[in-house]
Image (cartoon, rainbow, N blue to C red; front, side):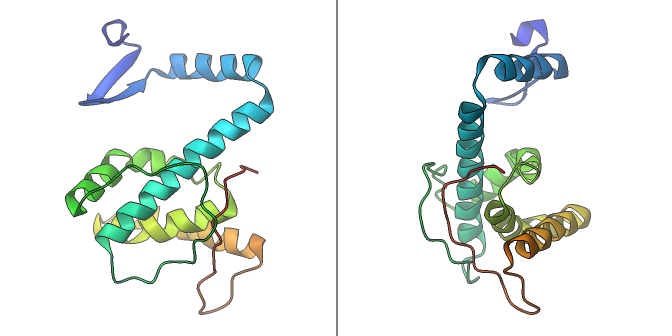
Amino acid sequence: MSRSNLLTEHVPGRYSCHDVLRAYAADTARSVDPEPERRAALARVLDHYVRTAHAAAELLYPGRVPPTVLVPGPAEPVELVDERAAVGWLTAEHAVLLACFEPATDAQTWLLAWDLGQFLRRRGEWQHSLTTWHAAADAADRAGTRRPGRTPTVRWRPATPG
């Protein structure tokens, strides 16, 4: 497929597809896969990315007190062995992680902002950092957990995109 320019290997082992192929795949999924299956698949993917971002943030910023994370979801994070692996994963998945904010649940949105905030600031991505925290504040407002000067408590639950 990469010889046909339908897939591009932009980094060794990481591929992206042409917009036409992406649109065709989305249309096919909508016409073939039932809505509950599509929602469940999206929930698993989001859970995977949120959990791995959280694992990366714990390696990079061990002194922070993380939000409360309770009930484990179905996805396993990528095993990151050290800070270099964490930065490598966050860098490689940067665009995907930012795209996760749109379909994420309120709890996932807050956790992603928490876990990506420092990383984005260290990279000088002020606008992305600000955007993620605005999304997190909106999520906390919807959940009724935002209090001036207090961090919302997030209880981990299997993702169900809303």
